[in-house]
Amino acid sequence: MKIKDDKLARISDLLEQIQETETIIISHKDLSGIPTQIAQYEAIRENLVNELSELMNEFHFKIQYQKEAA
Image (cartoon, rainbow, N blue to C red):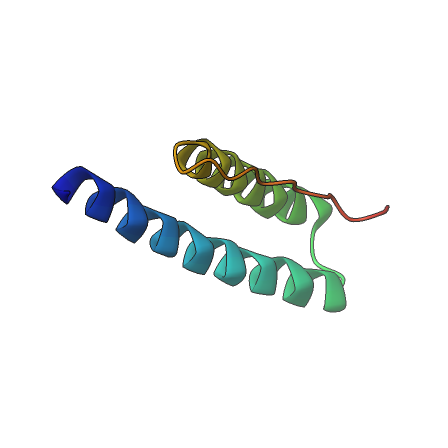
C-alpha cells in the first residue's frame, strides 16, 4: 500500500504545481510578459500534465489536456 500512497501524494503534488504554474502563466500574459518566459512555463505545465497523466493511467484514469486556443 505504501507505493500507492506515494503515488497519490505525487498526484496531489502535481496538481498543486500545475495550478501554481497556470497562475504564473496567466499573470505573465496579463502583464504582457516576455513570450519566451511564457513558453517556458507552458512547457513546464505540459511536462507536469504528462507526468500526471502517466500516474493516473495506473489508476485507470485518462487525463485529457486541452491547450489554450492561440
